[in-house]
Image (cartoon, rainbow, N blue to C red):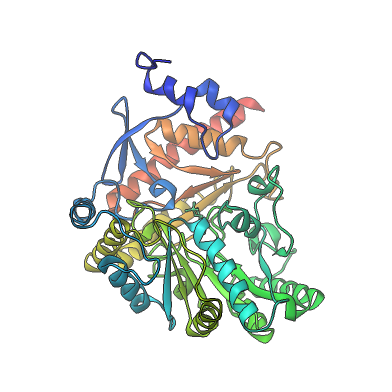
Length: 458
Ligand SMILES: Cc1ncc(COP(=O)(O)O)c(C=O)c1O
């Protein structure tokens, strides 16, 4: 059928199935078509600008028009548009990027393995740890523990690590052998009068009890984002990571830091592991690694893990794992340039400074009748809306107000994201002070609109 007469929006509804979208609603409302980007703004096909207060998907650290990244991609495309890393082959961009990532890692790391997305990277980590534990003669040590509300992706294994119902309902996951412990959200899950430290004690005891119940000889690794992103921007309680790591070390359980959102300055340090005092055995990187101008992810493993994997690959004759586009030269060249810019432009301390303005600014709304909690670290934050501040009671229909507020923000020229009734902010690292203040202003207007709508609906 000739579709040339249809508009882009009509073609979209006719032929695209969208991720994270109610397909039936999409048939009715159609897409918001984003046509171009400039700085921290994106423009729709009607020419309307929006501040991208989520950096797309927590990822466009350098905004949407960085010329140096475009040039890095172009010159690599001209030189070598594709090559792979299978069977002893290599190319300069992946070699240089691996070298740079090992240099940046906050703990001694030994090797980098490249993949294309956060989900692929997390599936790969699980396979690598299984592979290594087989090599060590510990075939029972295969179970993984992550957290309720944690987000690690949507492939079958990474969705099993993820602890969000939306990613599991209807999909026959989690797989057996994947366990979830408590969400470290003090505001929602601490007992009455429980301090942050006591809450952290209780959560680490829960982890220890699970390890003992299953048998430490069966638990391979604990998996967590330093600060949870998609699960609601959850900042862990004080001492949480110290206590969790102590339990892991006691039972020979590896610690995997999923830095897919936190990595490259988001929390005010180069890595979330630094912000929260994590000494991971494995780090998973993506998103701000290339500002998402190209799809790329990377796994950093320490030497102990590497030695087991290397022995196993030698015994079996190959490491039978790898993706055609893993470590793609164009993506690696863009990532290298992206890191260079983050370093040259001091964007990590800049993110810390802008983060303070963002957090202070959002905290001005802490007493608003609809606001239950303002939380965040560096340039990532969330404001949780509640029906009743005193009891912290959520709204009867979860997400209705959050969705409304995000819709109003879009009207006011700002893209944000509601996770239920929590509104997330994750602006590009390049945001200036005046741009952060504009984000706060547009949020204020959207919150006022939401208050009016809420009052009218009661
Ligand atoms: C912490 C974390 N891990 C993994 C992923 C999955 O990454 P991808 O969407 O590239 O598969 C995400 C995506 O948001 C993430 O936030």
